Length: 237
Image (cartoon, rainbow, N blue to C red; front, side, top):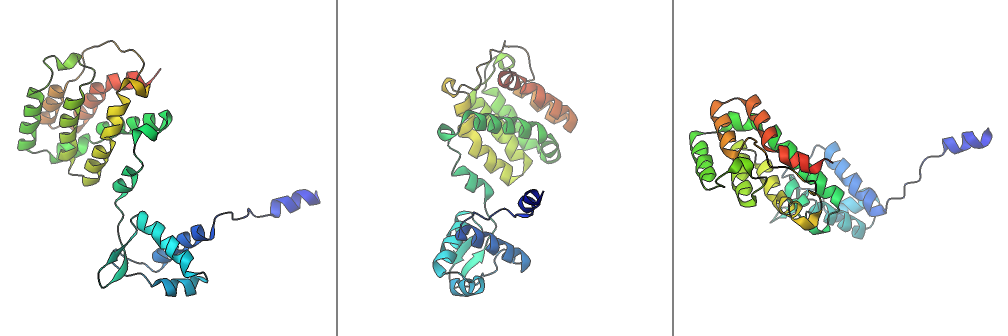
């Protein structure tokens, strides 16, 4: 019984490195002191003395924060707090050839979820000139689009325009970042979309344009789900 009580009273040992802990402490410090974007951060020497570590450790921790986009150097101001470009950070590691199948599949699933979920933004923000551009894109597509499972060039142009219409810059960047993954997933060597699918009628790009014209987010969501049906079918066994 004593041994059990003793084991239960033990706390997990912090195995993170000193740089890891300093990095975490710095972020907590910025939050605690209510630092805002653009505020200068203390000098390396000040931070080293405050945290009781060497300047080398501080420098390494700050370098990590720089790589994360949390701090940046400004002329005559030194290091300042910045708002990180989350998409750019992800983009550095978004090479489909080095991602495993499970990750590739999940990224592809994110794309499907995003495009169904952004119907409200499209309906709320679409303009007549956007609809005219969508119609122009559709006019250059396959002659029988309802029976085509996937046409990469048409997908990029049409769906890219839908992301533009949302007016959400992060969404637009995210879509462009994921394009190489979409391309790779649809190549035979990816091995993700092996399930045979019989071509069938589904909501085409032209059909989606008609739904956008009607101005109903619910109808567009349902139409987009139908439009992407073949992708879902090829993912699920």
